[in-house]
Amino acid sequence: MPDPATGVAMWDSSFDEALRPYLPFLPADEALSPETPLKEYGLDSLATVELLAVLEEKYNVRFSDDALNLETFENPGRLWTTLSKLQPAS
Image 1 (cartoon, rainbow, N blue to C red):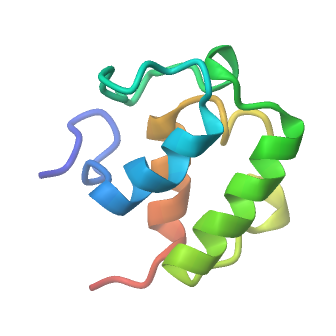
Image 2 (cartoon, rainbow, N blue to C red):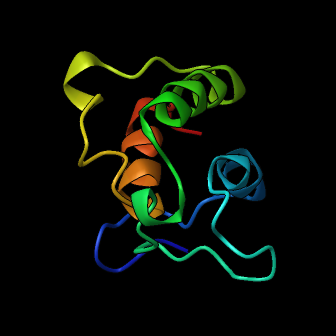
């Protein structure tokens, strides 16, 4: 079901599984929300680059240069919205 604010479907479990290892300060039992501040939970610049590579491989996409900014990696909602726009329609 699409998010009413973005029109983009909520992410799949693979996205959650890919993101969590890069958030060392996120308790294992805490759910990721679209607004979870990634930087506050430990996503630093090196982890961002590693996460980018993981997501590109897992979803078979390439992030465009204009998507490689702090806003894209601000929270899961923005990151998933950007990632979703890169995926072919199913």
